Image 1 (cartoon, rainbow, N blue to C red):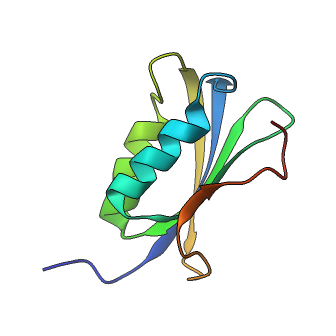
Image 2 (tube, rainbow, N blue to C red; image 1 turned 60 degrees about the vertical axis):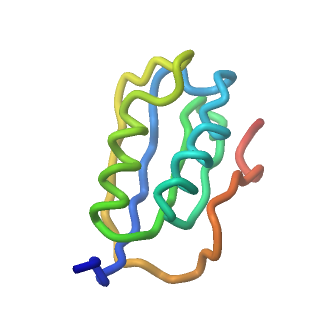
Length: 99
């Protein structure tokens, strides 16, 4: 039986996570998992992710975020679980942080 309860994952990924295609690969993984939301670089050299989907989908995305693409070196992921807002139609990169 599919999960119907939607949640939101807010994650901040620390380490060597900018300049290693982290956003690109996160979009690929989120699309594969059929979650919605966004990913962006932040000025403090972390990557921020907001994603919505079932807990199972979001846990799978979180597992990915904990290691990232081959060139990344993730040292920590801070996580906050929130109620889903339903405001996202797809998963994309945002550029309101830093590139």
